[in-house]
Image: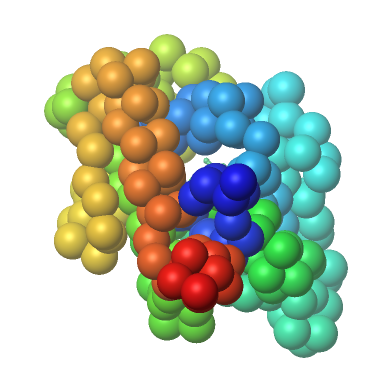
Length: 211
Ligand code: 5GP
């Protein structure tokens, strides 16, 4: 018997944005571990690798010439400058994946979100994660221990700018407690999958139901 979960559906582009340090990377990791149907869209970036990051897993680390070439060859869905480096979403297998029901998680900023939304509004679900306070954000950036004071100051400045785009998102979640935040984000993903337009197998199912 066909239930809703076995009906074919179109995949979605699930976008998580937040200022750095608000917990987006942790939430992304938790979501990828908990859910087999969503895969990370790995961005390309010109920024140097941080300790612990793996090429091809966290990012495709490329130099400026390679990034230029990718732009010229129209390899990007979207790209944007962030903190003096460039970041972009390679098209890769996204379009065919969506058709087959594969969901993609995007950890991108508001500029990339706007571009994806303009290109592909119906496939996109946009979630913004807010820190409980700017003091807490500063503390989390310091605790991370990966960036210099100048970089942290720059990120704090940019956090204010990023937060000002909160109203360009479909959902906004405050990350006070990471587990609570994760459950909220997961509920959003589950509900978005149930949207009628994404359940492409419904027409046939209802036709049979009524026959
Ligand atoms: P980080 O250097 O801390 O990994 O990322 C810095 C910022 O770049 C984050 O806000 C992240 O969401 C954003 N970012 C990462 N990949 C992409 C991308 O492909 N496109 C855009 N527009 N932003 C990205």
